[in-house]
Amino acid sequence: MELVLGMKDSYPWEVKRKRQMEFVLRDLFEKWGYEEVEPPTIEYYSTLEATLGAEAKERVYKFVDRNGKLVSLRPEFTTSIMRMYSKGEIRESTPHRVYYVGKIFRYPSSPLRVEGELTQLGLESLGKNGVDTDAEIIALALSALLALRELGIEDFMLDIGHVGVFQGILSSLPLSPSEKLSLKTLLKEKDFVALGKFSSVSSHPLSSFLLHLPFLRGKKEILEETKKNYPLSPPLIDVLNYLGEIWDIISDFHLEENVFINLGLVRDFDYYTGVVFEGFSPRLGYPLLAGGRYDGLLEKSGANLPACGFALFLERLMEVQKEKTKKERPSFITITYPATFRSSVFAAAEEIRKEGVPVVIEEGKGEDIQVVQGKEIVYQGQDTERIKTLIWERFKSWKS
Image 1 (cartoon, one colour):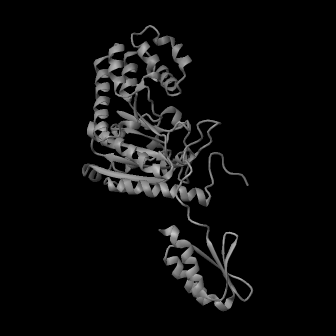
Image 2: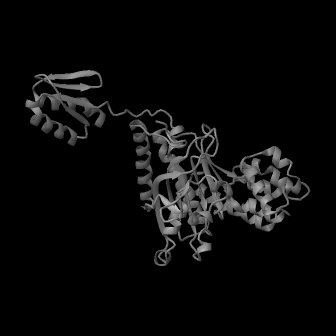
Image 3: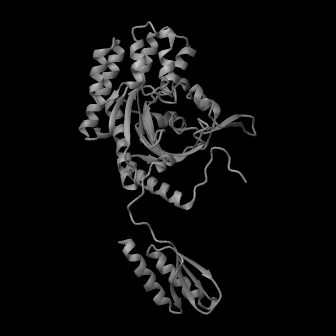
């Protein structure tokens, strides 16, 4: 029996680690005023089609339902949530702060990276735009990664960019739509050789800026250096100034230590309209966290709803999770008993469980009750009160 390519089985010890992350993040988001929503797993493909880029469309799991409609497993949550909040009365009662957790489905992006199913936990701030809102979302993304340190998520960094940088370059270059798409792909993949050979832009004044984009990463100083070293248009300068404002707010929150400006940052989805950001670890080549602003996502449906948000990828976080120093719960206690002690053992087990101790009970042969933890026989006899005391003594140090 083979596992479907891209899917993954999660065993108890893995699920436990994932739920620990969920608990920490849910608690954090709710303390910041976010409420949980739950969109459906399947959407009409037409709902997603307008928001996905060419590469993302190729990775969507889609099929025809029994009514002949083309539907898709959700490849991300943002479009579904924006659809939920596009309804007139709900949209007009903004702002909304919501978060979500669940599976997303995408065909693997590479033969070397087989992940077709991922768990995302993320949030959306709907109905507000501006530098203060963008900075708050980035601050919350950083706070999420910092909160996970207690679970062994360390050595992370967060890059902040803006779609206006690349769009500002493209608007100045005499390129066809297909050439612009190719250029975006090269930049996203950091194909420096191909970028250098992109003959269509080699003689343009901004070609040097374009070719250096993948290397324009650093602290706030990179913004002034870029304005000084390249012939930028006023819209491009405005974008750099906007990133500087975000940096100042993040600094006021004392969260700038793990943050970098990355002017060459390009995201997978085409719906982003402003600031974009990614969190990552040097131990993994894929983002742990990704997000940005997407004010124009509902424009084609005649609605207008500014929004900004991000999502964390829990399985990727587990890949970079270091060994925890916290004491783990000991292995389960198993009580085996003869039928004559069924009632008293069940009552004792219930009392123990109420104290937070996991207990398995099994009816067996023989005359005595036997208590086993792992491979160790902890007790053998017929005194149920002694069983309760013994088990509680073993677990009280863990509970403290």
